[in-house]
Length: 409
Image (cartoon, rainbow, N blue to C red; front, side, top):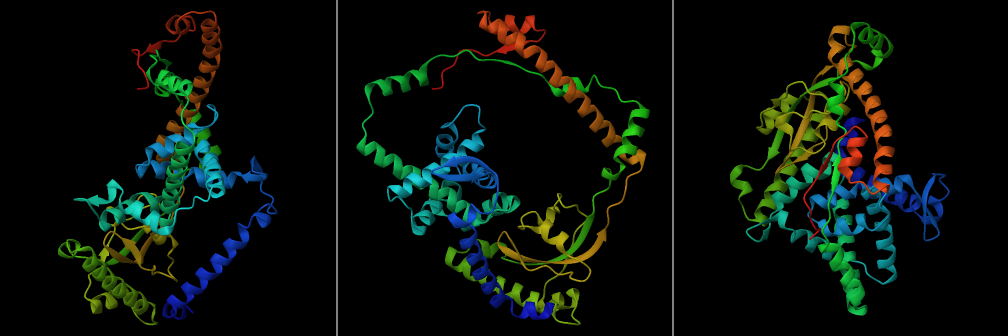
C-alpha cells in the first residue's frame, strides 16, 4: 500500500488538494459556519466571531511585525479598547478592515501582493529580490509556527488594503484644524511615567523547599516527571552547492528543480519493497548523515534550516521509517528513522531539580499575587488624594521608579 501511494504521489496530492479546497469552501461558508456551535466572543456585522477565528488572526500579529509592517501592526492593534490585548485588537480590526475594504471595492490582486513581497527590504540584496533570503525567512518564521506562504500573503494583502483605504480617506476627507492640533498635542506633550516592579525572582529567592515537600510533590505528580522521548534519524540532502547558490535567479530555480526531481526519485526508490535507505543513497551518490538523539522541541543543529523536521521525525515509526522529502534552505532532505529512545519516568533524585523549581515558582507566584493585591489599592488611593507616585508607593511598602519626562515624539 505504501508503494502504491509513493508511485502515485503527484496524482494523489492533486486529488487531496481538490478535496481540501472543497471542504474549506463548505466549512467557511458563512451560513454553514454558524451551525458548528462554537461559542462566539464578538458580534460583528451581524455575525458571531468565534475564539478560533480571533486566535487565527491574532497569530498574524507577530508575523506582520517580523515582516517590517510596523505601521500596519500599530494601526490595527492600537485602535481598540486599552484594556484589550493588542493581538486581539489586531485580530478584530483586521475583520473590520477586510469588510470595509470589500465594501469600497478594494481588493489587492495576487500579482500586487507578490510584487509587494518582492519589494520588502528583508528580501533584497543590492536592490534585487533575493529568493534565498525569502526561503530563509520562511524557514525561520513560517514553518516553526505552522504557517505557509498563504499567511504571509494574507498579512501583506491586508497591509495593501490599509494603504489603499488610507489613500481613499485622505483624498476625500481633509483633516480639521482641531484634529491636527490634538494629534500634535498627543505627540509632543511631555509625560512623566513611573513603574512599580514586583519581581518574581526576588520572591523565589526567599522560598525554601524541604525534602519532605519535594518527596510529597513527587508522589503526587510522578506521572508528569518523565524524560522526553528522543529520536535519531539518518538523512540525505539534495541541496544546491555553494557555487549553485550564487547563480542568477533563473539558473538557481532550474538547479532547485533538478534537486527536487532527484529527491522525488529517491523517495520513490526507498518505498520499493526490499530496498534500504543506505543502498539507495549509494546508488544516488549521496552520503547519509546521522543526528544525535533529539527531542521534539530540540531540532538537531545540522537540520535547523529544514522546515518541519522535528514533526516529521516524530511521525516516523519502525513500520513507516521514511519521511517525504522536506524543504530546507536551497534544497530537499529525506529522513530515515534510525533509533527511538522512549520516554521513561524520572526517579526522585532525577526529578528533584525540576520539583524544586516548580515548587519555588508556585510559592513565589502566590506571594507575588498577594503582594500586588495588597499594594495596588493603597497606591491608587494615594494617587487619588493627589500624592506623587513615589510617595504613594513608599506608603504601600514598595518602591517606584520614575523616568525623565518624555513625549511620544
